[in-house]
Image (cartoon, rainbow, N blue to C red):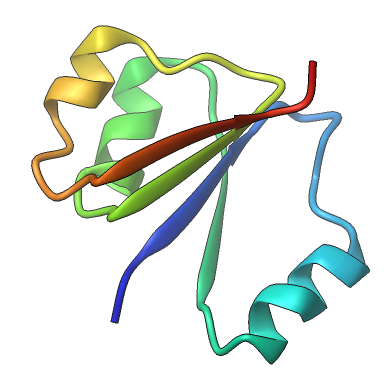
Length: 76
């Protein structure tokens, strides 16, 4: 099973509707509220997909994700 991580800024936590949509599709979702690379890496290093909302993904974090196949930035 793929691991999907939603990396979010503190003010953009997922809504109940979003969590329900992932659950209905049978997709386990890990929500990470971190800003420093040292906080991000342990939680995303085995992710297959990372979804960014209101935050950035430094190069050192990307380099620590050998399994990652997609990075998606949502929002404007």
